[in-house]
Each structure stands twice: as structure tokens, then as C-alpha cells.
Length: 305
Ligand SMILES: [Zn+2]
Ligand SMILES: [Zn+2]
Ligand SMILES: [Zn+2]
Image (cartoon, rainbow, N blue to C red):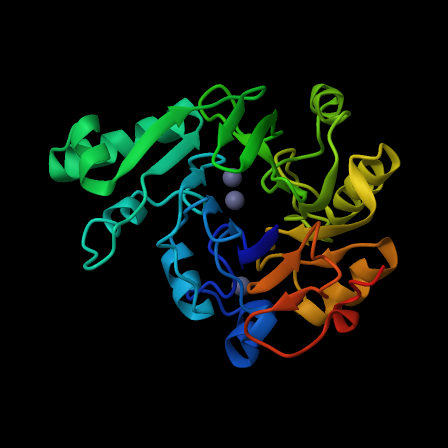
């Protein structure tokens, strides 16, 4: 299984073009790992998790094709995770026979896409499915889905409320497992109980709040909470001892460059995700993790923990 981080930022990403804070100014100057697009993760070349406003651009920047996509998981309908225009881009391709794309997401996320196409193009759901070669399935915490070579299992996120449903997802293929834990506060005991029989080779964990003292939220994690989550995943055997624990969903309000984050997280057995990071999990994992757009190796970011 190859896991590619298309976006390691949250909210407006880094830099926010309207912002002149030191983190945004540094990211504009340095680019590279300090620049973070909105959240999205690609599994192999055919399963995408989230389709926010940057995903098309992330694929373009990283030289990745999305023409083989067969499944999409939308974790929730916040705008950094779901841009309804994403589906419209599938319509205008030439000389490409796109496979049918099966879309999973909470009911309200799917409804927001249906509403958008009804208002913008006058398309009802069958027209949307036909025009964009998609088929839509609502999921909720506890749902299990088989799609192609994947087993998807959905867990409750500590994110959203009665008005907004959010899920976490575990992805397994014959080789390995990946736990997508973007956009959640500390996991509930219900989530831990559901996760207890799972085994993953990598987990990407919300660390949005980072080390801000003045940012109160129960819907995202501080750096300390992300570290605690990673430790408990390992202790319970949910994350393999040698598995990767990534901190992710960084926002510009949590100051600091990628290098500073790497130095902070490395002693905790975690590494900050960055756009273009690619993990090879399971069989073939003796191939060292690589990235697409740079020759720097993993030791530099503390991944050998
Ligand atoms: Zn988010
Ligand atoms: Zn800023
Ligand atoms: Zn969110």
C-alpha cells in the first residue's frame, strides 16, 4: 500500500494568502514543506480520502494522475475537505475512459453536493451520477464497506455535532492498513473500543491546535493530545510497533516551520506530515519511504523512530 499525503494543512492551508503572520510569510518565502495544501490523502492510485479545494492542484503539483480513482471517502463537509467542483472536473476529460467512482461520506456531506449540483446546474442525482461517472453511498460510524481491493471501516470522529457528521476511516488492502484520523478531538472511548481489534501500519493524526495555548477546541487536538493518541494506538497494538505515526492538519495559527515541527515530534516517535510525503506499507515496505518532489531522505525528518 502506498499512502501519499496530498495535503497536510487544515482550514485555509499554509500560507493563507490574506495573512502576514510569520508562519505564512516564511512559507511564502521558503515553499517546500512549509507550504501546506488542504487535507487529502491518496491510497495507491485509486482511493482518495477527501476532495477539498486544493486536491486538483496538489495532484498537478505532484505530477499525479487521478484517472484511476475508483473510490473516494469524504470524511465530512467542512470546506477544506469537500469542494463540490471536484466532481465537475471529471466531466470534461478527453481520450480517457474513467472508471466509475464510488463516493462514501456522511449523509449531510453527500446532500451538500447534491444541493450544489441542483442549484448550479439543475442536475438531479441521477444526472450528477451520469455526468461525473459517480455513485454515492452514505456511511456513518460503524459502517464497513468493501470496494475493489479495499476494506473500509468507519469510526466516530470527535468533530461536528447534530448539524454536521464526521467520520474517521481505516483502510486495509491485502498488504497493509492505514488509519485516517484527520479532524478529530481526542477519541471517545466508544471509538477506542471500535478500534481495539484493528491493526494499522500508519496513522495520520490531527494535531491542528499544536502548541497554541490560547486556542480552545474540543474538535481538534493539541500536539500533546496527538502524541497521547499515537502512544495509545501503539500500546493497544492498533498501530504496529514499527508503524508510522504522522501529525497532520496543520494551521498557520500554530507557528513554526516544518523543521521545527520535525524536531519537536521526533522524540515522541511522530513525524509531521508534509505535502508529497509517500509511505510504502506492508509487502515491499523494505523500500524506504520516499517523497515525490525531493531527494531528502527520511532520517532528516525523524521517521526512523
Ligand atoms: Zn479540516
Ligand atoms: Zn498566517
Ligand atoms: Zn473539519
